[in-house]
Length: 345
Ligand code: SF4
Ligand code: SF4
Figure 1: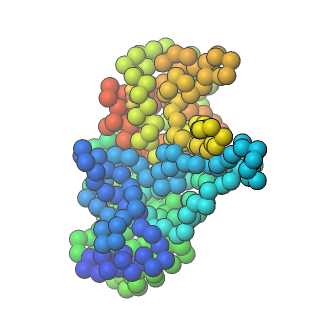
Figure 2 (figure 1 turned 60 degrees about the vertical axis):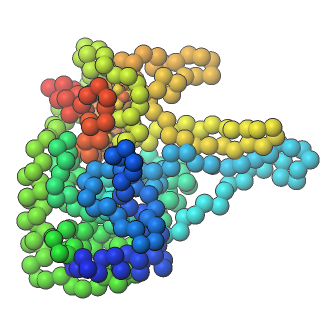
Figure 3 (figure 1 turned 135 degrees about the vertical axis):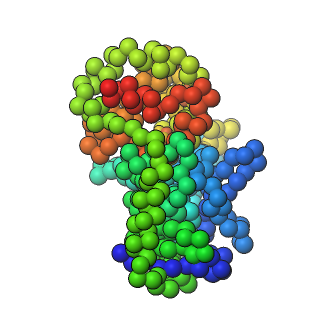
């Protein structure tokens, strides 16, 4: 394990130095007491006081709305019927202060956008441009259950560097060559003291101890899919749901999108927009038939996908990193931990 030390007095200057070959993206507070990840202005620092941003950083690689290509159907134009892919900026960018559960979520989502058979160039090009500089969670939020989902407060899965805040300094565990390259460009090259590894291990244990919220899902994998699908509890679980889609929009592992053509006269553009399995129109067919035409079906689909189908398909745990965002954001308090308990019992 290679560990460097960054004095906080050198932090801001190092960030600015790294801009010569990276743009910087980090957590910031917005109005209305919300927070998200966005590009940092020159001189602006990521706000490390935020543990769980309202919106996850998934938009860094999966924008809420994205132009796939533009076209014209004007026969007088030499470009008639030619699809033109926009020149998107995929230059290197460092995501400063991404939390371990959100970095682990990138690995889960990657399984959907980058498969042996299919590669989504928009997602993959943006992902490959990123260097993930993580920040360990030392004061977990109350709904954090990431220790149950293998994406705990000091996990390095999906990260290039893990920063650990020790007060006056950060200890930086360099995980990949990409991470080492960002550290060099920031001028952070001071070797940490010999006891740094032990310090991180102790802090990790303390942080993990603070996470008291847990879920179990081993039995879900063993149960028959149809038995779970036909359970009576879906009626009571789905009853209060408003199908507002908030849980899916804030979730770092939700990847549903819709493709729409927006046309005006003879010009058009094809858009890739976030969508949600909780919306009635998500599954509607062109015939008008909707295979998930009730709220119960949509709520069941969300939880079956996250907690059952993902386990069955990949045998790599559930499609959830325990960030707790859907728990804190749901206006009617539908709690994935409670649903998981019912499905697992
Ligand atoms: S946030 Fe709550 S009410 Fe809204 S769709 Fe999700 S479960 Fe339903
Ligand atoms: S399902 Fe909820 S707790 Fe799990 S990753 Fe998504 S938002 Fe976080």
